Image 1: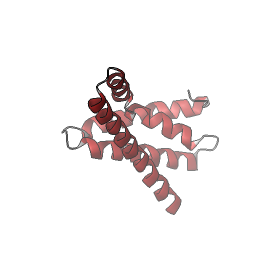
Image 2: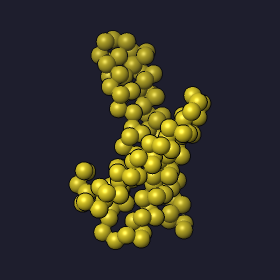
Image 3: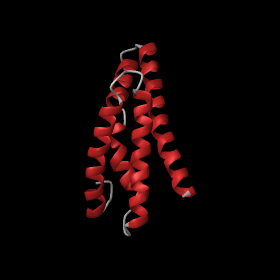
Length: 120
């Protein structure tokens, strides 16, 4: 539960379902995956920020984490480590770079949403 209270967990669960649905709809094609990660993390951070402004007693960062946790490339990272351990350095390095790119798309979406919430 990432140290969150019950209200944060109750908010994070439907947010995660919403983000999973959005991710599935947006990443229909291979080229759309890049935009889907960004837009999904942007939506999660915007929704979390808006809820944190109107509901007292919740931590915005915990809700954002709960919303974007399913976007994180855990299996790709595991495969990258496995490839490097098996001495397949080129494919391991390529998968590691892919993990870094996915992480940067997610963090860029959260950063843009945080900047937009600061403006408004």
